[in-house]
Length: 415
View 1 (cartoon, rainbow, N blue to C red):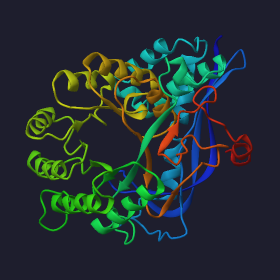
View 2: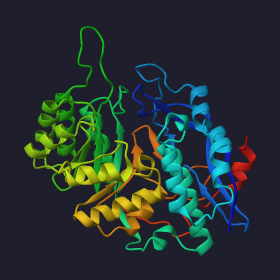
View 3: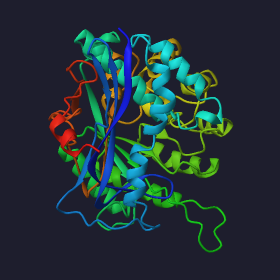
View 4: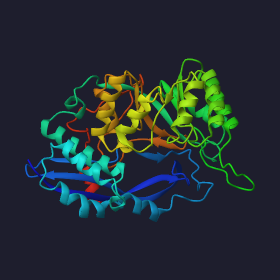
């Protein structure tokens, strides 16, 4: 079997997500945008796909507004970003992949990974590499008529999930203050989530004479305390806060949530500042998890583990370039006897969790917000990660990554 084409399919869709200056998602007015699906075709008619597999729509109680720092939900910017990799895929990646054996995923991954070294291929980001790698795994599963997690060895067919709450905002009744967080966390528990992770405020304040440019640690602590009081002592809680606190603020916040019984602490400082993480880990008993966004794929995770920088490792498809390096990270954690928590939701995360034998407690389901409903995207016929009444998500059982693609919708809206 040989690859005959690598292409992008772009189609019109809608989004109610806007971005703050750092890039975090918040609810906003519905807008027209563009969604991109990546397709690998072969001479035997078997294809592989990578497509966004989560979706948020505004609920009837929403009060959509522009983000306080400026309307980052510009329609043109969103549309361009959604399809900006298409030219690079056609001109640079397609000639490399056409003619290759699609089952030679290690070969293809390493070719593309080595291309990332220089600035000439700066468009080949880890998220784009992840799309190519996921499409190859999807193709393999469709060819074998098996879900990817079984091709990877298979260990479990369902995983517990947690409610991953969006980053804080300034929308009253949204996530504007500790009381908003407490009310929404309690609602998530009532919806059946067995655990909740908070993303507190991350907008930097550079106004006036403020030369530090960071949110309030005390507000974060008040939020974490309010949520604990709202959900009670038996719901497991986690915190992913502002990513650029100094080590002393990070310690103050970490000690507070340690005393509140939170089960892990995520990315409170710049992740390239490894010495500060080692210092923080030596001061706290709450497990430190990471790295999340630090570049370097499985190699960086290896250095964090070997250097005693984290208690729990972290990996996500878009962070490291796909399923192939995620599998390497799983086996790395097996070798060191360290837990691994998978970053972000979606099909790739579920299949990796389905094959893992290292401890991985929860699937990250979200991002959730009081103004949003988390639902099936219109380009799929069924949701990748529906949650049952016990807080479990089943690993997709369809061949490949489990996409049941709504071709009628895509063809009607294709650009």
